[in-house]
Image 1 (cartoon, rainbow, N blue to C red):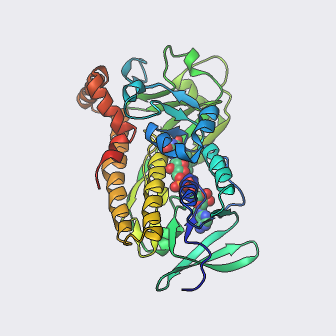
Image 2: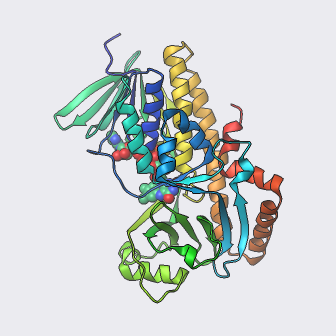
Image 3: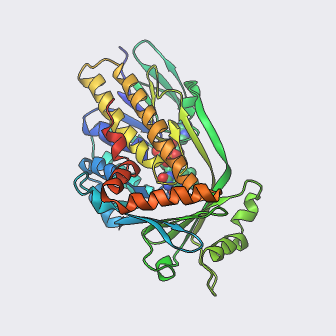
Length: 398
Ligand SMILES: Cc1cc2nc3c(=O)[nH]c(=O)nc-3n(C[C@H](O)[C@H](O)[C@H](O)COP(=O)(O)OP(=O)(O)OC[C@H]3O[C@@H](n4cnc5c(N)ncnc54)[C@H](O)[C@@H]3O)c2cc1C
């Protein structure tokens, strides 16, 4: 066999690629991460960490500093946007026997990435190369050859396995000719952040609150320093209008009118897709995270399930590389995580969206009454939280 540059090459230094590299490195597997950007981005994207994800990340030593840098959310609410009436209030302490972290943690994903990068820097067998853009790959008998653009020019690297953790537009997935099946929602999502404290306006507001409304639902989410507010944007509204100061102010005033204008720290408008790759494995290539599945952000499940992929894949790769397990173990990874993406993640995210936007009055009354009854019954509420927190998906057998 020719000499290898790594046992595993991971394309993408996002939270999923870095989790995978840290978990592989911890098992002594020679891992090389190729990240196209010159450094870690600090943009405001996912910020929700569910209990099961924190349990998994704990052995990597990143959870304690995340807790110090984030906000613990003990409960979350679903309310009617207009009346502010609480439809359901879910208390995470119902999960105290199911997890070591019975709360949601709000902490920007770039903070996790920075902690993982530090962890990898202390790991002899793992390395991250920035400004290294994956271009293509070719299979050889026992290895895979990867072409990379670096600041010094193009080069070729070889490994046993290649993982595409390169996000929703994954070039690895395209080169491997794996279909990304699903759809793009007609509406875009606008995320706005402001230092205004909505708790002073809405009594007993939970730090994560979904406001249901048939015209314009909204999500209120406390990030450590700011409140984030998410709105759906009609498909015919030009992006420049949505992002203008006047339109952002009008939306925030529509949510909570106040005499002063809102201070806006960030605004991001992005399209939302609901897609799952036809397979998470093709030959010596595997996919994880957004490269493998995408869903709407209601419920904060995309980033979390991507991290769960990373741990499942690191276990499977370690067993194949070091314990002599058959490579078909990676087909099991693909089947299992793909089914979770379809049956748990996308199904739950779609249900969350329908609940918030339901226009038919009879259907709206029915789903809201069901949710109220679920939250009021501790046994049903625990089952609901096990699903919403992705613990149920992890307990599902292969
Ligand atoms: C604007 C925005 C807002 C979001 N808000 C939320 C939210 O509120 N809640 C939520 O749960 N989720 C949210 N998400 C989704 C969440 O950010 C993703 O689920 C998460 O980032 C997935 O992590 P990942 O590591 O799989 O992919 P990414 O974070 O996309 O990382 C992929 C990495 O691969 C790199 N890369 C890409 N191509 C190449 C290449 N050819 N060579 C080398 N490197 C490459 C990229 O530079 C990037 O660093 C949001 C996403 C966006 C875009």
